[in-house]
Length: 158
Image (tube, rainbow, N blue to C red; front, side, top):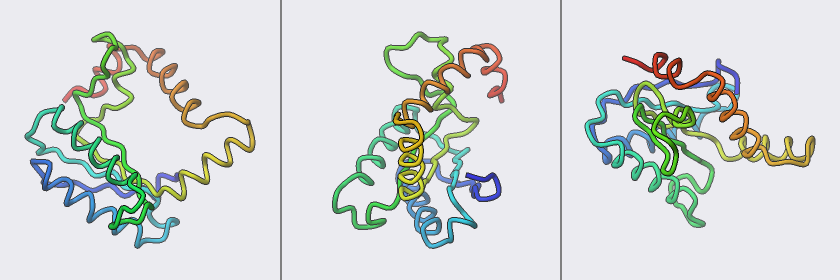
């Protein structure tokens, strides 16, 4: 995805209901806009007032909803990922840099076109015979480990 096709939006949402509503509005706009103009959207919520657990639960709910076979709003065309400044993975050490894989300066919802993701996954598999998501995860883990906890913490410090 070219930097020129990323839409950055700031939401004033403070809770789950408002952020889901803003996410669905942005999802509709994303899918109604040519991919050469807007390929993906990053929706930031600096006023989010609920806990990181509430945020994670909202993200899981959004992912599950969008994966339903008969999802009526976007008809299976949209995918999402969420990021939060305090994100942690279960079963990982407190200061493991891998936590930064899902961290951002503000709670952020990433909205992606499934068709574009599917195309990239297929292209990668045809080229390499391997899994693109596994490759991305391995590269992220390696890059974050090289950077280290201290450097990454400073980069996201307010």
